[in-house]
Image (tube, rainbow, N blue to C red):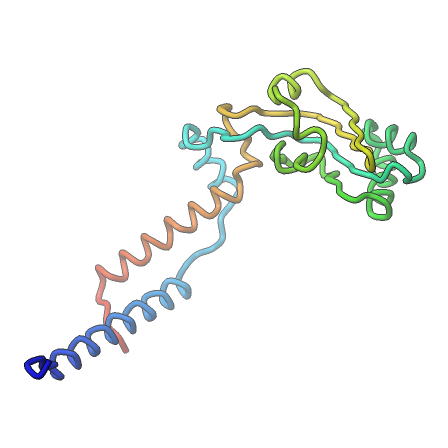
Length: 197
């Protein structure tokens, strides 16, 4: 061990190099943050979607509709059956108020695409063996277990390997466009006159 010598100068040079690299990276990150245009229009999103549709194939079944889980002892079960099937705004409002007060779990935004497995996890619907056939043949379904009543209304569905609806991937596309801008901006900063202040 007496023959081991540490080259202090080499270590100091490496520390200085690392410090400069770290400062450069932080400066570049700050410049990107300051110059990045984060406004993305619906038109840009639609254009990207149209040009890259093959990249937006579904990997899961999705649906638009309503779902509610209530205790078997909850009141007005016949009302919620009527409300969940209705398209009248006042019935949807009544269902929302009811769900807020009594439901253990619910999803009532029928304009939003939802992942079938995620919404219906921990319910009797999760045991359906052929989910694609279920989606194709079902518009309304009820299930029960020892404690709960589960109501499901399906307005529209898409199955895995179909093209994702634009609404379902809108936020993903927004992030892709934003990341492409970041990469382009960082590349331009590196190619340009890049120096630390």
